[in-house]
Structure formats: structure tokens, C-alpha cells
Amino acid sequence: MPQGRQMTTRNLNCGVPRCQSLLAAPLRKMRRICRWLIRLNLALSDLLMQRGRRQIQPTDLKARAVGFVVRELREQAGHSQERLSGECGFDRTYISRVERGIINPTVSRLWQIAYALETPLSQIAKRMELWVANQERGAKKPSRG
Image (cartoon, rainbow, N blue to C red; front, top):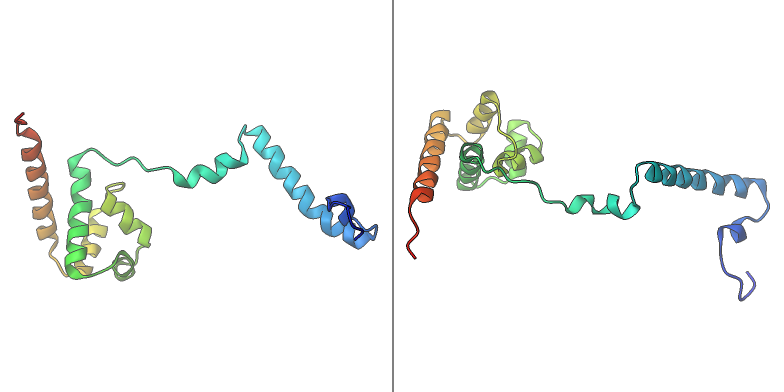
């Protein structure tokens, strides 16, 4: 390449039909992606920033109780989320979402979690009720100030 000449897509085109076809496919894909972004009124930076959004945490105590108790029992058993999900046959992200209170498991799935943690389901239910009662009691106390 001669000195002082900038490298552009035109310079990469050497005139050989094979080189032109190798470059044409990726350029067509990029154009198609750009057209979609324009139609959807999105910038590429918007798509890249999607990952950084925080999920909304539930405010309902009963929704959070399941996750709190599952996390507490999992940590007491010395299990990681990965190990617990493997024993239950779930994806690790499912256990994570349960623990954060994003989703609530069905009774059959809660039973699988209890079995993997070697804890009776009734004990999980009792702990959830106690946790909710403690949280409600803490919220009702007037602040001294």
C-alpha cells in the first residue's frame, strides 16, 4: 500500500470479483441492521446500554419472603445457586430470580428446592411467615426522633 493513502472500504476493493463478494455480504448485513435501527428509532448505543438497567425489586413482603428464606437456607446448606439449580433441575438464573423476589415458584418447584436443601416444605412456610411478621412489626414501630 502506498504511503499517505488512507485505508477505506474502497481501497480494500482490489477489483477481483471474489474480494468484492467477500466484502459485499458483511456490508449488506450492516446496512440492513442500520435500516432496522432507523425504523425502530434506536441508536446503536441504546442497544449496548440495555444490559445496565436495574430490575425493579418487589415491595410486597410476601413476594420477597420466599426469596429471603430460600437464600437463607441455601447459604446455611453451603450450596451455591449453581449447585442448587443443578440439584433441582432448574437454570441458575431461575434460582437467582426467586431469591430476589422477581418471581415466585410454584408449590411443586418449591418442593423440589426444599428436597434439594433437605428441609421440610413446612419449615420453609413457617420461616416465610415469621419473616413477614418480623418485617411488618419493624415497619409499624414509630420512629423516635
